[in-house]
Length: 292
Image (cartoon, rainbow, N blue to C red):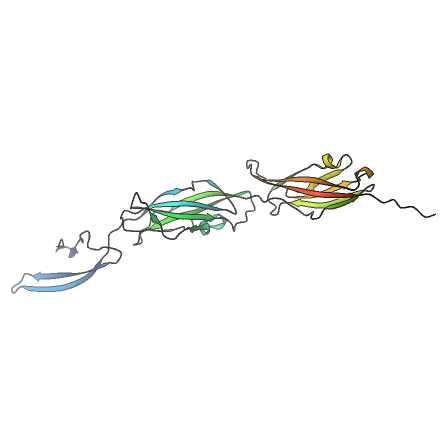
């Protein structure tokens, strides 16, 4: 039904009606082809031709990527969730989705993309719209620069292999500044009427930030005490020097070092902060009498 033959070219044409093939599997059909030679006598030859008809489908279309707009700021060490909406023209066809690489090198983020669940969910309002729940995971990235541009692709496929256009998603990955750490572990023990000194370090564990350190030594210990920190942006050599007089003996003093770890990028206002409280116990120096 619906077949035609062009004797001048020898081409046989047939368009299978819509509905000939249903579902994913191809439909096997047999065409009975009869060739008649108009001679005397008339000769007729019949041949069966086996063909397979597959369902005509359209490629899916990635319509929207929600919660991950272009140029979004993403911080290392975190998980970011987003949704991908894919349009399938046929209601009963479920698409698949992949995240292909669109760039090479360190900017390739395709390996950071995974599925919250493998199969999409069809929209209750629209049976041709499928929603994929995705996540972008940056826990395993240790960014040494303040930021880096990264990119990945999204591509959908029909059950028959028709592919959508690749949608490229670019984001800016920023370093996540760690809280500063201190090497001073135990409380200090100072003695009156002699110079006491405690040396320690305050540092950024990843050496990525710029430290600003403030202290309240003078307010707590009084005149004559010296607390200072010097060194590189991400590591400071610090010390407390003090010669308490006899009036300061047999007392405990708590001093604070407020360490602020800031981004080296002046346009980046992010920071992390830690307050280190250290106790100093002052012992009274026992006078010794020199024997005559």
